[in-house]
Image 1 (cartoon, rainbow, N blue to C red):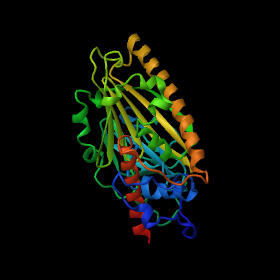
Image 2 (image 1 turned 30 degrees about the vertical axis):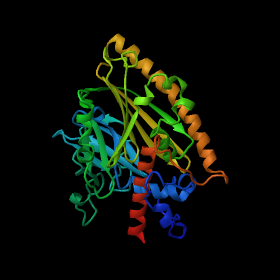
Image 3 (image 1 turned 180 degrees about the horizontal axis):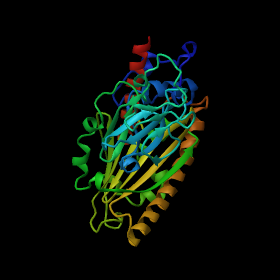
Image 4 (image 1 turned 90 degrees about the vertical axis):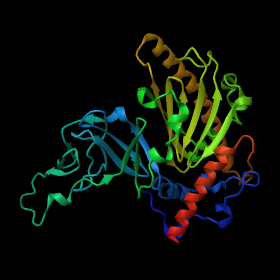
Length: 371
């Protein structure tokens, strides 16, 4: 976890935290995107207080299968037990902090790569080399530290703080909205990651509106009927949607709909008939982030499907390169003395306003709790 120096607390004025109607609201201050103090604040006030996506069920499908992740500076380990229960632990040996795993794998037990302490798949300590002469040592007190885990529609989430209602409650209506698409029936096909020179909130802001599409994504603009493009907000998610024509929907003879869900604070679900693309935005510094794209398909094996997947990924990469360029330009603009905050388009930026108000709420809660 990134600590916050009490002598360098970020400035959070009441006016900055005030939630106002979209028609009167200003955007969040530029310092929230550029000041390193807010990078540390995001780890504590946002990423440690929300359910964080860390992977998908296929990464730990069988007993003993495990993978690693890191959120808010904490190393994590997800492992499927012999009882087929998925568990989360801090990827930290209780001896001297060594790693239980450094990548994905499958094993009957978890062994620290530093001094060989061995743990069962349920996190209990089993093997302790060269500890016969240690007094007052009870291995039952040295099991792995657990992390709350929830699986939702094939995706895996963890919580690093005191967990509240999980994804199954917060996003309960999404599976009904996207029917007949069943996310659990889609198989993992590919992962692509991008390192972007902007604060993670810049990338999220950009995702949450189609206002920029005609200017930044000319080829993407041709695919949608923008007069029918709608945006809704609800609780801790928002959704942008648009109907598709048969030509646009490569995996169906019918049209269907495109759904672009944003699950606060940093997960996107891009859902079209027969396929899902998830985008996970991970802060890597005050002015940098990594965006992880995972692709899932109903058919990922046939020759035709593989050609379509290649086409999907190639087109997505073109769009992503355009987004990277504009987001990095925006980051530079946010550092300028010429800019501090702006206003919202009532027609086009309702989801951006919603995201920034959720951010204000988390910052305000942290301020109240820490004094």
